[in-house]
Length: 494
Ligand SMILES: *[C@@H]1O[C@H](CO)[C@@H](O)[C@H](O)[C@H]1NC(C)=O
Ligand SMILES: *[C@@H]1O[C@H](CO)[C@@H](O)[C@H](O)[C@H]1NC(C)=O
Ligand SMILES: *[C@@H]1O[C@H](CO)[C@@H](O)[C@H](O)[C@H]1NC(C)=O
Ligand SMILES: *[C@@H]1O[C@H](CO)[C@@H](O)[C@H](O)[C@H]1NC(C)=O
Ligand SMILES: *[C@@H]1O[C@H](CO)[C@@H](O)[C@H](O)[C@H]1NC(C)=O
Ligand SMILES: *[C@@H]1O[C@H](CO)[C@@H](O)[C@H](O)[C@H]1NC(C)=O
Ligand SMILES: *[C@@H]1O[C@H](CO)[C@@H](O)[C@H](O)[C@H]1NC(C)=O
Image (cartoon, rainbow, N blue to C red):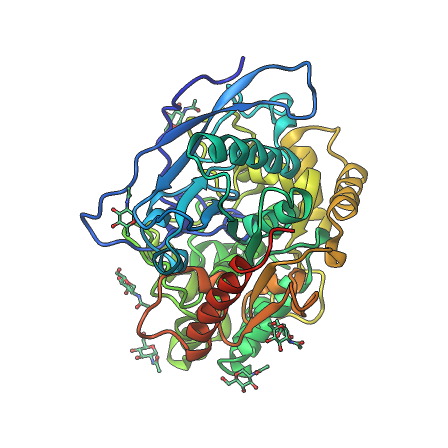
């Protein structure tokens, strides 16, 4: 029943190149790969025989987990850098580019990267049916890392070396939790933009989006607010539904009485802007990802451009800009369409990011639902928490109740500590305009577990390769992280 060797799935490039839009596509904080020069050779896939269920000693089934290595910079005695991956494919581009590569060069590090189970090509079960997803959890992922680390220490002769782990977003949390739970295997961790607190209703997300748009100018938020207010008024009558269908280029006519479709529409439209804010100016452009040139400045310039008509018309113009850049003719916004896609259990058409497997983790471990429940945000109130929690049942079945979700989140914070995380030698870089910082570590836990505040940068910016246009504080943060790692490497292994 479980999957053998090499999976045949070729996953599409992620981000804006995804063909399908849904209320919760990319906003979970997935980390897209950096750009590499055309013609750069990338390391090949390697496969590690991994245990399916680490918590049932009588289950001896195994599967193949993908990993990458790059020993180019390694000199005997140097550290081992292990990249922890999260809710998307592990991309070999990170093995040749990114801030950690520049650290590896200076510190003679051996580079490893292990793909997360149930993402990319690391598919432990034959499909993603709900029964088969029971082996998908952060705890199983951490145990994968432990078994992998112990095995590589031995097979690569890296037993005496100090291991430093890196992760961003969900995998940033995994980096911190790996150090917490397996301190004998990992010497230090760089946990970038890590949402270490699980939370069902992540309503603060849109508050930070608001604050980030305000860095451009308060008018930008006023226009988002006005546009959503006008949209809401148009929903009150049939003629309005037709207007919305036309102006927002909906694939199917809007029925304003269908609350789930309405919620999904508002959520998708907010999602466009959420994504721009989350990834603003982070050097993630690489071939295939379209639309990285759309920034907060672009969005706010359109929303405040009076020659484009009313705020509502400008919001529609913005939507058209997103559709065009994605090469889509119309906006697929219906709830049914979204749930249908999320119910598909075959690995064949798994687009991964924000896909079925990550939604499963949100329904069982994290929540993180970016609802419209805060009154301190301009996106209206059409996508409340229950719009998200009901998706767990609609996608995975009646067992996946709100009670189950609430317990899962409580359990996650109980086993890892939430904001009371007790760790040493973990650094938490923090971008001020990244909406995820609301669940992250924003103040020093201790002198050995500091937060680094990067004013003006977005999600995971410090992990990307340096660029001449980087803000000086971003450059300084990369250097500060380097100094910390250097200090750690001089410390005894405790
Ligand atoms: C390791 O990374 C360096 C720097 O990008 C690159 O030149 C080299 O080819 C990589 N090695 C492997 C095995 O991919
Ligand atoms: C972004 O780049 C695409 C081409 O890659 C271009 O068509 C589009 O006009 C650009 N948009 C903005 C806002 O610069
Ligand atoms: C406003 O939009 C019009 C029409 O697209 C464009 O020609 C003009 O340059 C825009 N103005 C600003 C300030 O962006
Ligand atoms: C995957 O998508 C293609 C194109 O939409 C479709 O023809 C095929 O049947 C799908 N495969 C599965 C297993 O759903
Ligand atoms: C992290 O960012 C938040 C929001 O900008 C800020 O309030 C906090 O002080 C930052 N953390 C540190 C350690 O500077
Ligand atoms: C947090 O820790 C960093 C690194 O040790 C230090 O530079 C900074 O001053 C600390 N911040 C506070 C508010 O204690
Ligand atoms: C962040 O930078 C802006 C200017 O770019 C400044 O106005 C603001 O005070 C800074 N915030 C912090 C917390 O340093």
